[in-house]
Amino acid sequence: MRLLTFSTLILFSLIIILHSSSTTKAHNITRILAKHPAFSTYNHYLSVTHLADEINRRRTITVLAIDNAGMQSLLDKHLSISTLKNVLSLHILVDYFGAIKLHKITNGTTLVSSVFQATGAAAGTAGYVNITNLKGGKVGFGAEDNDGSLHSFYVKSIDEVSYDISVLQISQPLSSADAEAPTSAPSAINLISIMSKQGCKAFADLLRVSKALSTFEENIDGGLTVFCPTDSAVNDFTPKYKNLTDAKKVSLLLYHGIPVYESLQMLKSGNGVVNTLATEGANKYDLTVQNNGEDVKVQTKVVTASIVGTLIDQDPFVAYKINKVLLPRELFKVSEMAPAESPKGSSGSKKKKSSSGNKKGKEESSSSSSSDAPADGPSADDEEADDQKAADHNIGAKEGVTFIIFFFTFFIGILLL
Image (cartoon, rainbow, N blue to C red; front, top):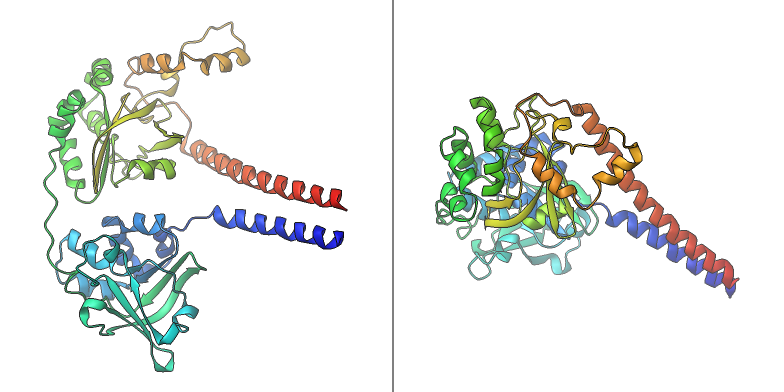
């Protein structure tokens, strides 16, 4: 009996280990399709319409992928981005259908809800997709508002993670009059006006007379996240800003924008290095988003700013208020932004001092003491090494927790014996 109990505990611990390892992995549709060049156009428009984010945040989902030739037939209809989003959302099913399950559908046919249906934009059941297992192993797909006509067929499985995500190729886009109906374009967003009215007028004034403004405006419809420094932060930094060349002023302003839509929840769950509007070729101009609970910080290797408010969140555009000007290491020296320290202090006392309660005040004062000089901080290789160390640390921590759970279970089993 004791042996049986002990065996049960061991089995239970193994289940915990397998579960913990599987739940740490999240799917990423962009990376999945990036391995298949034949779907590059489809992959691109999933990102442009922000449906990639929708797919990644969901669990138990099926993506009906269309190859480049099939996408061309859809693009030839010259649909607006908002309408194209409706059409592509019809191809994302909120249930899991792997290649095996397709051929084992109860009664041979079923109706499955799509993301288009889930948005509430579909009329009635227009957002449902009919899947039918036909003779000879053929599987057909059709939009419900198209009289259930099966005009597209299963080609092959591209990638599957059981009961999580399935990416299947179908022969051509699903036809739906409701999804393809013209949709009104989003109302024009006046970026400068929004900033000026909500505590970021100083930054808006700099942007208004800069060549960087057009880049911000061009990215709004395709996806844009802006970090707007408060008026006090910009005013403190203005003397240094005036010393920058015109080209560097443009780069600095562009550094405050990310060319994708990132809601606050997305920023909290997607910590890591991101490109900015200033990123071009070898000019990295990247920054790091890091959250601590509900607090989200933006780090640049030179300064760390905190998000202190949201100006607007209207997908595909969002703007946040931050408490410091973001200083890229491509323009400012890391060492010159560090708090002053006593030359007699030991290395241990320096570390302790830098983590004291007045660190925030020192960082804020240091933001106005920067100079227009090349960065002398870590190289790109050093950054990549740091990122890899952080990733290794996270993996090690997870493995450590798994080992403790297993050891604790094993110990209890020994006691029961």
